[in-house]
Length: 110
Length: 113
Image 1: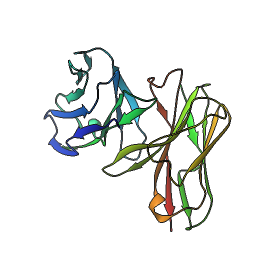
Image 2: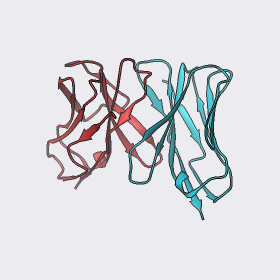
Image 3: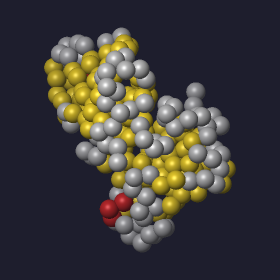
Image 4: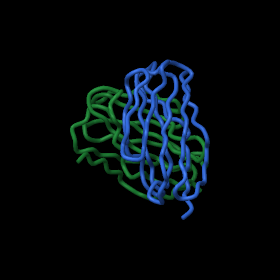
């Protein structure tokens, strides 16, 4: 079945450093979504990418969807302590369901 | 704002007990989902429903069942709880299509002793 791999599993950065998490699918995706889960909270939708090669920005966050629609990345510029949490990608491909990656836990040292 | 509520934040049950987890959404969404979240494994889909009285198995349905008698309510049932079902359970809902944004509830931390 469809699998979505996400790396790294965990990253600890100094405040002000950049951060990137990567998502790879075993199958072509029709769209990919990104969610953020704060410690003790629940996943909250950030963005959806649909088009091949699409790039979207939300302030310091940049989201990319690969040309082959099988991979995606989230890049945070100059991390802040408010960025801490777990970032999940979720791909919609075959079947009637989103498949979530395992998530990347981000910790920021101030 | 979409609101998804779950009946309990924390629950402790004994092995063999029947457990009901309730989820209610207030936005008239068609689709509802139950996930479990475990460290290093992300969110794994247990069951989902695209209409009242309709349900489909997700990736890990064994040991679980669901009920959707009303559009706004989706229940997860553990017929005979086991210790390996100790986990965080998250309910979500989404409007029209399965590709739509999912809105999550606060989660229920279930411990089975």
